[in-house]
Image (cartoon, rainbow, N blue to C red; front, top):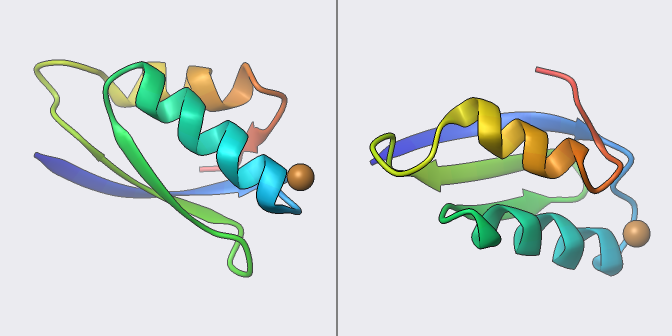
Length: 67
Ligand SMILES: [Cu+2]
């Protein structure tokens, strides 16, 4: 299990939290969002899902993954 914290721009409210968490969950990872920090801490199993696909899932919802 890997844990990675990503900076994500554009999250501003509880709706964003649900959207991003849902997108991450849908591809088999779990994400915890810190709105104040603008970050998402992701836990995932590399054999199931790649970090790239997690970033794509978040960006697919209209948010920018900065790093
Ligand atoms: Cu929002």
